[in-house]
Structures are given as structure tokens and as C-alpha cells.
Length: 89
Image (cartoon, rainbow, N blue to C red):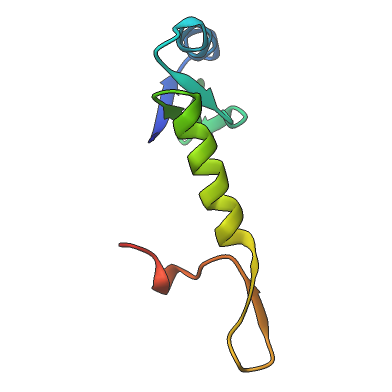
């Protein structure tokens, strides 16, 4: 899975996403809304995820669901999801 940021005019971004969706080699998941680029009104940016196939998307979604489950840490507080300190980076 790749997380990518597309930056350009809204017309160019729409064209590229549509082209990627038509290509059977890739699966585009959850493109964000158009976000402003600081310092210009002409260009926008969009974040999206690109998978190799439907199976990769399914495995990623299952992994995300496991991480979203509530976890009890012993302090009486229930945290949902992973904290940044416990991430893989």
C-alpha cells in the first residue's frame, strides 16, 4: 500500500484519480477532499491510498479494524487505537 499526496489543479487531480480508478492494476481507496495549498488559490492537494489489488485492500482494512478495537491498559482508562509512541516508526 502506498499513501500518496496529489497536488495540482482540481481538474488535473480529478483526471488522475479517474485514470487510476480505471486501471485494473491499482485500487484507489478513500481519496480525501480537496485541501488548500498555502500561498496559492490555483493548486489543491488530495491524499489517498493506492493498493495493488482488492486482496491487499481487504488485508489492510482487517488490520485497521484490529487496531481500532478497545484496549485496556490497567489504569482504568480505555484507549482506542494505537498511540504514536507505540507505532512502528
